[in-house]
Length: 138
Picture: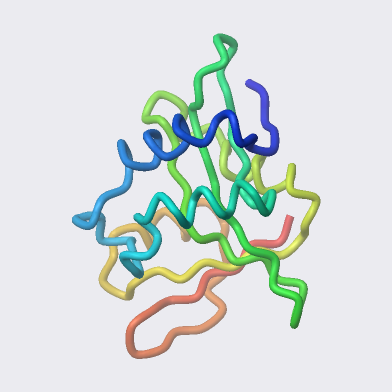
């Protein structure tokens, strides 16, 4: 597995990858904006997308992130991992590759995905009326 910053040449493939695994019916989606291909494209230009690739050069995981200037925490906007590679700490490896240390995600209170964050050692930072805020330090 190779983990690297996404390139402009991979934009179409990354958008297709996200579209394969993320859609509006996913209960972890916090905002329709995260499904917009222009957002992914812009994030690639800003060097805020990491991809993991298998030995054949195919994308097996992708994560879109945004480093916040105000507090040095990185917001993880969206990520997807091919089913065959789940349970192998791929997301954590990708986050480490960003060279940042503190990450945060929003997850709707009623999403089954909260179990994923619990199981993978994210800390519940806070909760409001709509979301759990999960934190991971690497």
